Image (cartoon, rainbow, N blue to C red; front, side):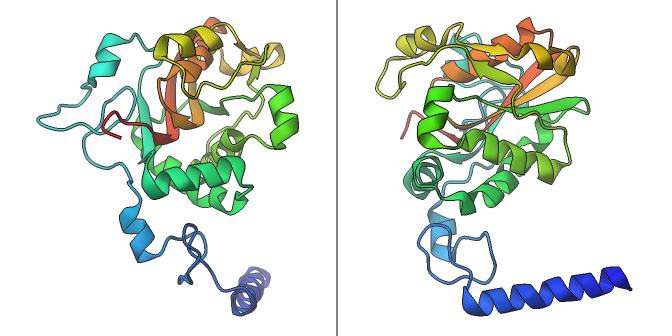
Length: 249
């Protein structure tokens, strides 16, 4: 009876809260029916990734695709992780949502982003998985005040009821921003910059790690993270990102 009463109390509080602060679309801020939602127009204009994808990076693929197929980039570039997925294409409203989360203190995006990530990652989830975010260097953390990848990774882990390790990885040196750099320059910039925290090594030895980041462009940062996990004797590494940059965009 106590549990039922608590549920009723919470439902009443939520109704009151919605009367004062009606739920708004995460993108355009028009009123919507429930929290953490997009209006019909914004949902239509947000490029959620569905259908056939590259098994390694999650980018959409066209034509006759079989399970385990790779895109052209992943056939040319040796990826240190096993499988990868992404929830959105990094374009239009999807791009604006990612940037709002990353630079605009839009923490209201975290919970739905975690749900979208959980959906995208379900078919690459291992039973012995440990979920971990791509880390920020402490100097950037001070400026930004939060790691958006850690926020969405934790939200995803909650949806999946999976183990989560916020500080598995660390950046041993500050790297410059990768925007505008060539693929080769991106990989060179992050090479050797990320390691597993010594106190966390035992948590991943012989286990699968699922790395979470906000955006994948070249995959350089995820590669550096995956290599660090494998050096620390993780059994394998998979990756999932909120958004994926695609060549056509």
